Every structure is written in C-alpha cells, then in structure tokens.
Image (cartoon, rainbow, N blue to C red; front, side):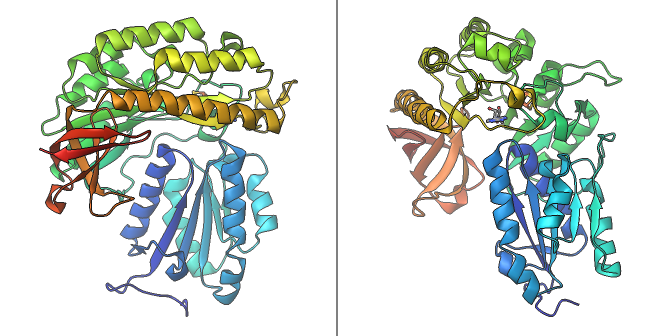
Amino acid sequence: MNKNIVKNKSNKELFFIYTYGCQMNEEDSEKLSGMLKNMGYEKTQNKLEASIIIFNTCCVRENAELKVYGNIGALKNIKKENPDLIIAVCGCMMQQKGMADMILKKHPFVDIIFGTHNAYKFPEYLNRVIQDKVQIKEIMDKETKIIEGVPIDRDSDTKAFVTIMYGCNNFCTYCVVPYVRGRERSRKPLDIENEIKDLISKGYKEITLLGQNVNSYGKGLDEEITFADLLRRINEIDGIKRIRFMTSHPKDLSDEVIYAIRDCDKICEQIHLPVQSGSSDILKKMNRHYDREDYLNIIKKVKKEIPGIAISTDIIVGFPGETEKDFEDTLSLIEEVGFDSAYTFIYSRRKYTPADMMEEQITNEEKHARFNNLMKIVNKVAINKNKSYEGSLLEVLVDGPSKNDDTKLCGRTRTGKIVNFVGDTKDIGELVNVKITNALSFSLNGEKI
Ligand code: 5AD
Ligand code: SF4
C-alpha cells in the first residue's frame, strides 16, 4: 500500500491527468478518468496528492512533446520519495516509432506506457502493475475495431464531446495524425444516437461531434449514411439544444452538410474549416486537395446559405518553401474571409512526414517573424468581427464563473463567442439572453436581459 497516499473525503485514492493537444485527446482523458472512477479512484486537480499520474500526450507539434518530457522529468524526485506513485504515459506520442523506448530510457521510473489503440485496456495494465509490481509497455501498431461502452467521466455537466469517427486518411504532408491515430473508422449511427440520448437524459444541452475529418463520416459502415444524414438524425433527438462539430476538411465539405447546417435548428451557426495556407502552391505541397480559389468558393457558399455563420480556421506559417509572397497570400486570405478566430501554428518538423524531408526549410527566425505578423492580422480581423456583435441580443449557454473576473459569468453564443456578463449562479448550465455591450479581441461583454 502506498504510504504517502492522500485520500479524499470519500476515502478513495486519487488520480491526476495531464492532457495535451486536441479535443480528441480531451475526450480520451475523460475515458481514462471514467475507467479509473469505475475502479474506485477519484480525480484530483493537485498532482502532489495523487497516487496515479497519467500523461495523455500529443505529438502534432514539437512544443507539445517538449512539455511532456519536462513534466515527466519533474516527477523523478517525487517518485523517489514515494515509490508507490504510479506514472502512466499514453496517447499519440507513444505511437511514434521508438518513442516509448526513449521515454523509458530517459525516465525509467515510468510504470505504464500504452498507445492510442489500446487505451481501453488501461484498467488491466494498472491492476497488473499494482499486483505484480511490473513495468508495462504495450503499443499496438494497428488500429482495432471501435470499442464501445468505455465509461466516460465528463468534465462538464452541460456540454459533451461525442466522437463519431477515429483516425484520418488524408496524409497532409506536415501531419503525424494518420500515423498515430490510424485509418478512418466511423462509429455506428445507433451507438452515437444512444450516447447522445443518454447525455440529454442527464441534462446535457450541447453536443460537439468529434472526428479528424467529420465530413467523411460513414465510409465503411454497413448502413449507408453520410455526415449530412447523421447531422439531420441528431437534430431530431428530443431535448437536444445545440449541436456543433469539428473538424471539417474543406475538400470534403459537401453541399449537403452546408444545407443540413442551414436547415437544422439545433446545429449552431459555426464552422471550423482549417485552411492551413492562403497560397495555392503551398496547399499543393501540403497535399490538401484544394486551392485558394476552391476555399474561397466554399466560404462564399457557406456565408450565402448560413447568414451570420462564424468561421474559424487553422493556419500554419513557415511550411517548407513558403515564400514571402505565399505568406502574403495567407494574410490576404484572412482579410478576405474575415475569420472569427484562427488557431495559428508555426510549422513544426515531424519525423517520418514528407514535409520533414522537403528542402527549403524556413529558418526559425523567419518563421517567428511571420508568426508575429500573422497574429496581428488575425487579431485585427477577429476584433472587427466581434465589434459587429455590439448591441445585439444573443442566446448564451452559461458555462460557469468568468475566468478573469469571478463576479461575472461566462458562456458561449451559438456562434461560439465567449460572453462575460453579470448573472446569477443559478444560470450556470442554462440558456440565457444577453445584450452585447462591447467587444474585445477574444470575447464579448454583455448584460443579461
Ligand atoms: N506543424 C505545425 N502545425 C501543425 N498542425 C498539424 N501538424 C502540424 C505541424 N507539423 C496543425 C494544423 C492542424 C492543427 C490541428 O495542427 O493546422 O489543423
Ligand atoms: Fe492531419 Fe490533415 Fe488528417 Fe487533419 S486532415 S489530421 S491535418 S492529416
């Protein structure tokens, strides 16, 4: 028995999870948490009192990996003082060739290593470590069939992520995801619907459908179904208030999906449509299967069919061979589209991807200079978009106290805008109407009506 174990009021042992990366990883961590709670453990926000610490890793960019190395390293002395502390490392980083061995060599005190395809086996690994005091490293190279019924402990009581498909077939030349998450696999529509019905019965109001490329949902299923069909079916579920989804690859955004957003009252007026670059030459080198003109045409169609839709995107600067002209094309595209928000990234070389092998890598200095310019344009465009909300009355789903000012509440509009306003704690988890008084770059201020 762990002599330093701290137990909470209910006398349960505690676990702490570090989650890096995207919403898919967040959902995976909710599953790890669900499995641990089923085993009788309780979650803590304080790693110093945990008897199990898990690192759910990301390898999309190098800086996410560096954080993981640093944070595992920082546990060395804690583990020395408390040898019964169990440390597990899992997620995308572990699927990379040689990575698990490298972690074990650098940090031999890690107890369990597993990958993305066998996370459902975590309880089994944990029991073996506790009973037999062994070190476990188990990574599966290939994806399995989808495992349903894994318990899930969600972070919110109001909003839930529901994964509809796993993996990616696109092989954008900069990206490791297809190598670490495997090929596309879709969940059966009935499994998705049942999960959502269960969530609604527990009081959830908003569902975000997740997948690396939701637009190609349905391929390979016995039942013939497209993503647009699935959206329409989910919209019919009694009691659901809001539906969102991410991520959409522009090459696969069908007219049917656009019409489904337009026609279905529960689907929010918001779309995340990563463009990555505004230069057709760079898009070709990225293997994105659309050019600047195609993207702008999709945006035109989306804006025409769904007035007021908020459009967000992902942008990479400093891809190999990106010239000053290519970069300027990205800046001009941002202004032309008028994105509501953009996740901006400095290109990060990832081993085994085609882009890593490309000549003409851009210097760090140049990448950072472009990144700073990019941020300026993104922020300028975003504040202009937000300003257009001033004076309007919007429906806000209240998340909880505002992060920067706990006298206020914080929630999101259907378009995904963060709104801070004075309200009553009984509004948390409810839909309220808020009049927008002023706009900032990343949020709106308002008054409850
Ligand atoms: N370098 C920088 N950004 C990347 N992304 C994916 N791979 C890389 C990389 N190697 C970004 C893309 C993607 C988002 C999730 O991460 O913009 O849409
Ligand atoms: Fe990566 Fe491209 Fe797949 Fe997105 S679509 S996960 S960027 S390979």
